[in-house]
Amino acid sequence: MSLLAIFWLFFKIGIFTFGGGYAMIPLFHAELVSKLALVSNTEFGNVVALAQMTPGPVGLNFATYTGYLHGGGVFGALAGTVGIILPSLLLIPLLCHYLGKIEDNYLFQGFLRAVRPIILGLIFAAVIFFADTSLFTESLREMIFTRDFSNFQINYIGIAVFAVTFVLNLKTKLNVIILLLIAIGLTILLNLL
Image 1 (spheres, helix red, strand yellow):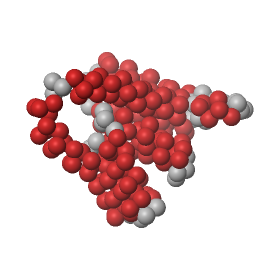
Image 2: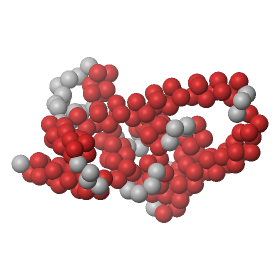
Image 3: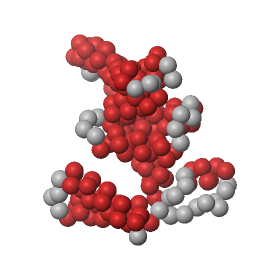
C-alpha cells in the first residue's frame, strides 16, 4: 500500500471511532480483512494480540504495526500512526473550546445517548471476534456463512489458557505482565504435548 493509502485508511477509522481502541477493532477488521484482504483472520488476531501486549493504546499500536507491515517499514508505521491520531489532535481542541457552549444542548445530548450503544456494540463485536479466533480452530463466522463445518474444531488449548489466566487474575494479585508470561508459557507447553 502507498503511504497515502495507509494514512487515509487509519485517518478514516480514527475520525469515525468513539470509544477507544477496542471499538476500533471491528472497523480495522472490516477494512483490512473483509474489504482490502490484506490479512487473514488469523493474522489479524495475531496483530491485535501483539497490539494489546505492547505498551500504549491498542488502536495506535495496531495502526503503527500494520503501517509498518504494509507500508514499507518505518515510513508506513509513521503514516499509520499519524493517520490514527490526527483526528483526535484536530477534534479534541475544537470539542474543548465548544463543549461549555453545547454540553446542555439537547441535540448534543441526544448524539451522546445515541453513540453509547453503538460503542457498546463495537466493543461486543470485538469480544465476538476474539472468541471466534481463540475458541475455534477455524472461524465459526466463516463456517456459518459458507455452511461448511468440515473443519470445525474447538481450540482446547485456547480455552485452557483462557481459563487458567482468568482464574489467576481473579484469585491472585499477579501483575498483567506476569499473567501474559504465564499464558505464553502455558500455550507453548500445551502445544508441545
